[in-house]
Image (cartoon, rainbow, N blue to C red; front, side, top):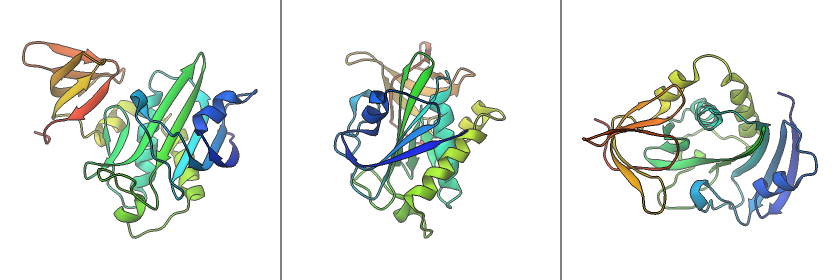
Length: 220
């Protein structure tokens, strides 16, 4: 993948910058030192102090892109000696603490993939960072290039198999919020070939396309 990296200082969000570009060429990467209004999935705020990796990448839309990027980020962190896990669909956790988040906003054949990784500091109590999890040091630029390389690799081989190996959601009791008022609670049984989460609530088996997943128990 040919990439064109654009560095900016402080922005509202790298997603906003990428969206506002006149020409959204595939492989364009926006990297910011700080985000004033970083955001995650389902409207969650992503705190973006100086010292982290905050990037948005213009890629081709893909039904499995959410899982593909999760695997790529997890692999890049694994190479640093970190043991990352994926909470469905693509929150990246270490010891149940969030180290990286992914936001994908698609329009037609193009997707803007936002990636935030805590490198030097953990901005929240339930988060962690690269420095806290490994004795190795890495620059923001080196981590970005490692992730970009892993995105290329993630298009090869059996993606669902690779995703399942990282996924910590399987075997847990979970609550998946489908909307402000609707949710499903049960055992996460499977990730199907379309990347959907299969949950057994004791009465019915639900195939969930998208939602906000919360782990309620340890794996069984």
